[in-house]
Length: 99
Image (tube, rainbow, N blue to C red; front, side):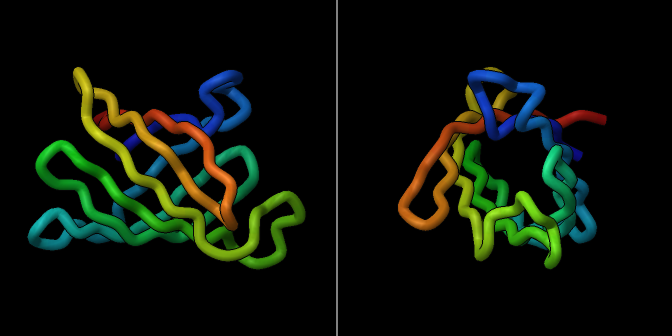
């Protein structure tokens, strides 16, 4: 499980939790992300200090972005820090593993 934020200016506004449903060989993973907007499914990989994920919000969420949102980050002192992209826009995120 990971916890993080997609709003580094107001962390509580972008709080999210990542739940792994399957952790495949080679660092490939699938699962669910729950955040302040709602639920989303994701696919991604976490290997050699890098994380890449693509999430898509569940249908019918009024505030959710449509289409896929891509995340790419690097591990620094136990925290992944990086950028997310959607329809030409980008933002910053942080997340870390929790037990």
